Image (tube, rainbow, N blue to C red; front, side, top):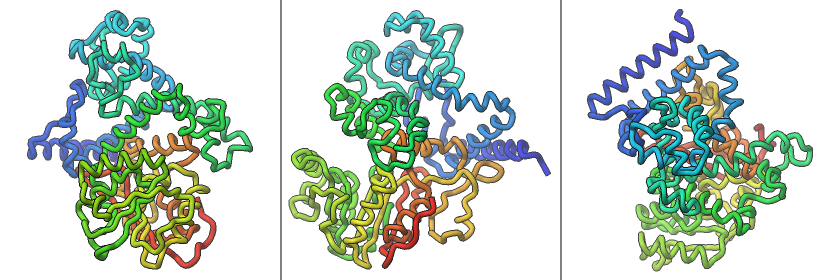
Length: 485
């Protein structure tokens, strides 16, 4: 039998052949690492066969590196993560990517970069070099750097002189990824330095309170992130966060809510309550495609803000929906008793990951108290896969769709760091909110302990895939047992 390394190499080779063959047949191109990112360069990933082959290639390459790289070097890829993060933040905040974009593929000398952004050229060279060692930027020749496909993701596409002169408006009107990266390298990065201190403190180690986060400890105040943003001096950070969140939303299909549930199976006049639904962005596709549904959008922000944003969104997209009354807005705290009793569907999108189990239980109990036997609970969340084979796939808990596609052995079942973004989000939620993403086992236990039974998980795969999955649940007569987490 061949060695594990040879098995991994064979998987890589076979997947590369599949990718190249399918790309050739469909007229698609493999991206050039040294060319700037453009949405069209990701077109190849829209084909499910190519997307799977690319995932296997990446997972295999990473596993081969783990086998053959000296273990202390691999260890320090993780230990030294904050060194690279610090270097990247300097490059983002000093607009290096914009300067390099204007310099073109031949690159820009560190002295010329520094002449534009006011930084020390030698320090800039050191920051760029460690990043170039990971293909974020490219050292074309000594002390001359250019963008790569990866670094160009940080480009605001604005003139460098403008973003350097006005950093407060740098991210306004952009697609949001640079803003998201800048945010992650600021508030969560600072919180990460206090993760262990938070867990070593008996007062916070098992706390579910949102103001008991590492970030709260980092700023020296028992504040939630939202309270931190309310301070006038943090107005830029809040705006940057909002722009970054818009960028995340843009990464998923605009009608992702349509695939969350069998909406067409609901009877005429069925009532759907969008719990914590903001201005109804997720409800809009439902109202458009299923005009017989009665939709209630609930959230907590100040009423005048909600009504203004709701009017703007729905007046543009579907003015008749609000006028006719089939779409309604309500101010409602989801920790308070739910006023709508016995509705057909409670729709809860990306709410649970903002809260600890303690607070999620409060939300779920209120919805359970208002549910009728016919009521369905539909939650859209990122369901975290295990890094090993999930025995649920062999029969386990018997929840259809609960296990995602697993990578072929001997690769890590979750494709390893290829799917690291979800785990990054999980730790991010801990650092900022003392909350988390969850596995399906965790969700199942949490829901059962609050009177709900998971019936299925819906996954959207292929070229229009999303990082969110939907979990369907029905009321059970009595909550049973304490969760096994």
